[in-house]
Image (cartoon, rainbow, N blue to C red; front, side, top):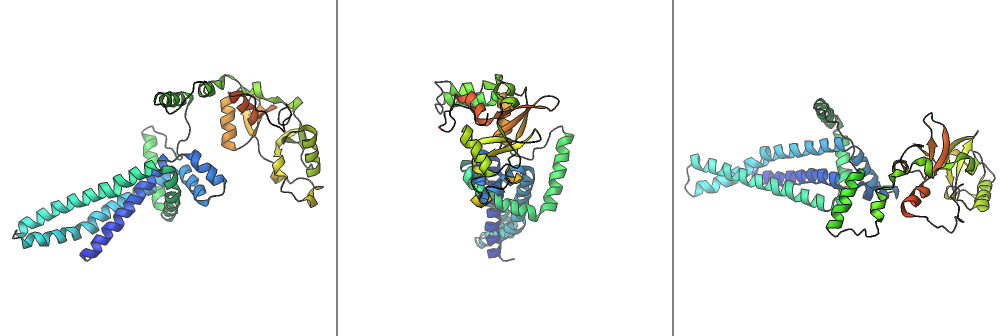
Length: 349
């Protein structure tokens, strides 16, 4: 291989190393809360990035494999070319080959090491950490594509490393952690207040961290007070219920059992030509399930994870005793929310 080709390969391999390092740090530093809204808005890049966050163990295996391969190739391919370019000038100044060779080798190792550490590691790492939420949208799709291309290799590496971790008593994580305990949140708030980044004179944030004393049963709407619609109701019937009550969403029942819920906007896309036909069951949204003794913050977390605005409240023997609405949980946190369409009542009581 010519010296010029060796230098070109050095540049290519340094860029490859920088890509894998930046991908790894961006993926670990990016906040899922910033990516999910983009994915829900239909961004293909954001959806792929969420996939990477949910399979972080495989993505890290791919990144580490890429870093290792690039590092080894830099030594095998680029180092000889630089060594040769340095050895010739040293020989021209009168140094014997026995001296010029070792000196050129030492200088080459120093140059390659500095380039590898600074250009291939430190710079991409700092850039990735600084702008992780934006950079990850560009790096994650490429990393996912590469991971799929070499899936057998990284799957083997991932299974092997996870096995070793379990032997050591450590449970491997496949998803980027995006949640905090109440104690961790309290510490974050206190540190932010100390640094002057957050003001909480009214105690709203502190109250938010302490509202878990309430149970789901305290904020639920009992089944006896719940206004519902039947499976197979028509858009005309649903709109009539909306006009009659002022509610925007209703629990859906079939044979007395809750099957999900419908929101007013779920029928807005239905053509008026089909208003006398039953609403398709695939428009019915799923409910979350929570226990009647679950803390209210656990109920909120469950509904956030499932994307549901309503949750069944179940007894220990799995009997449904009521429904919790997301709005009612939030009202316990921030106070009553006045809605012009609400008319002073709950959404679907």
